[in-house]
Length: 448
Image (cartoon, rainbow, N blue to C red):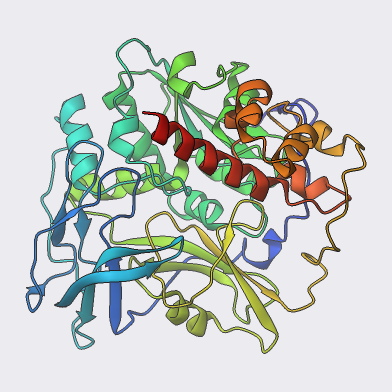
């Protein structure tokens, strides 16, 4: 049942940026054609890179495993298309450093039917077999974190998980891929939730969706089972409602302690896109070879939600969607937490949920010069983690990075960008915090 408009849950603080979701939220998912060359990084996940199973010159079919997991904190890779492996070499990545990648020449004359599968009887799979099947599928968090999904399905033994939370908030401006998945694939989503419930051994699952997507709430409500094991709730539209700690607080009223994971309060959180892929792929024993990507922004001629083969060069996707003559900057992910990309020949990866293109001199993102902090307190009121971004920024400017962590809880910041968004002095606080965290990590490593 849809909860009352006047009683929708939320968290304290946060911001309400303009959404711009109307550009794509009514557009159905469309399949992108295959590029002539695909670049499949061996590291598309947190953990050790995958180990190649193929050699240059070898032919592969769509869906075939082409790289194996290297241990538990790793996942395999699968061929996104039928073709020939041209080489295995270092290639540029969206984050900057080059990463070992498989270069696949795509057979354009092929039907690109998915020829490889290892079907499962999902009704008889044990919890451990479900977890293994998820790893074999190469599944990672499709919301952007890219953490191996099977690892999240095996929480620490000292933490007893009693609730699964399906995250359908999609609070970043412009992005609508999860929205369309919930509208178009509710059956896959419910099946994925059922499988993860069995793997975790939990009876309760809650799907949290921001109330700017009421059509998705209603679509899912029509597919809910009658046993009340899965429910759906609309929560207030506010950024960053989709952050797992915020959503847990909104839906369940539980507070994840600083430095802890959701399992510490009996919760496991999964993105709805991830769960829908589990529901779709596991019965067939297939791997992740494509994902839905929102391409939007004022610099895009044909914005939309595209089903994109993993490894597709960003340039190819933008050429298909079309960019305006004034296109100036490409942000991977959403504008709040995404990052600007320096080169268009980097590939789409499993974790890439969206691509926003801005034009030159765009008023939506144009900011003035950085000015001194005026101690207005706007950033303190905006921070969902109840930190003091103003003081953290002053310490960062002074280079006192250790104090930021020891006295002002820097590591509790998950870089949502709310502080930077409201700062009237245009101080790039999030960028300061990222540098501080990196320096502190280096110092800790040198001390060991």
